[in-house]
Length: 287
Ligand SMILES: Nc1nc2c(ncn2[C@@H]2O[C@H](COP(=O)(O)OP(=O)(O)OP(=O)(O)O)[C@@H](O)[C@H]2O)c(=O)[nH]1
Ligand SMILES: [Mg+2]
Ligand SMILES: [Zn+2]
Image 1 (tube, rainbow, N blue to C red):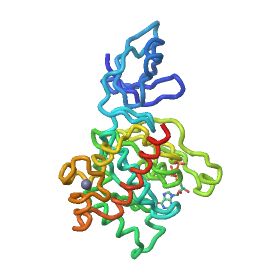
Image 2 (image 1 turned 120 degrees about the horizontal axis):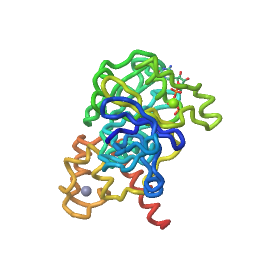
Image 3 (image 1 turned 45 degrees about the vertical axis):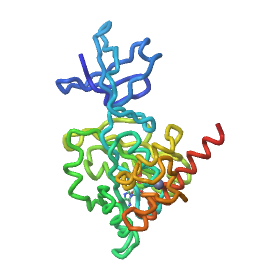
Image 4 (image 1 turned 180 degrees about the vertical axis):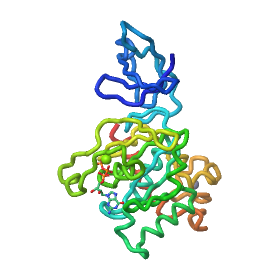
């Protein structure tokens, strides 16, 4: 029998069976030592001493480490226009990690009600849209209509710093979620996240996971070669530089640097590339 893990609280797993019933199960000892099921996993299970036991994890399509969710199709990268202020550098870092995990990023800008129409955030949004990203906008319940359709048949994970409004966004999409939210000053002041455990919620024909905001991003699995492939705007130019081992910094005949001069790649994105490359190289030096 096959089911999907939709919630984990300590060692209790909630599974959704193929006939859409929820059952409580536990992971059999042998399996737990090997590797634990994650939310999003498809698992084999059997009835075991009048309880349900998970016997096997089926291969994962994608495998996120933070948050621990398997088979995620897309990530909503949530970033507020203000409080906390929008960070291009942070969005680009998350996008690179999401691309690297083979997950589709969607950028969601919240708290647009806090800025006026001429605010610089709108130029930033335009830049991402022109680069090929989907950008959804939200401000105090003025929700983008595309939220009605993007979730269908997919597992979507929300990610972004603490206080950007991830839980608030889900609550406005479905008031029945009643997810806990927290005043931004409290969230930052206490360094404590409002959202803790991972759970998949049904939404518009798919599943969505709220996650705790993070304090740091982990680039330890990414190499420089992966990075170039993980930046959407770079993709058309990868492999077109004069030198095979081009680092896209000072080399002549660099297709990426040329694309920046031609305004085909944003300077912001290139700046983020250099920043992430430095993180990766600094790590190498430490090892
Ligand atoms: N003005 C305005 N405030 C918002 C909006 N969305 C969220 N907020 C406020 O921002 C604060 C933080 O919201 P949360 O939804 O708890 O943020 P979160 O991203 O879930 O935070 P963590 O769970 O700690 O990661 C709350 O005080 C919300 O009321 C918005 O669109 N406009
Ligand atoms: Mg939250
Ligand atoms: Zn190059």
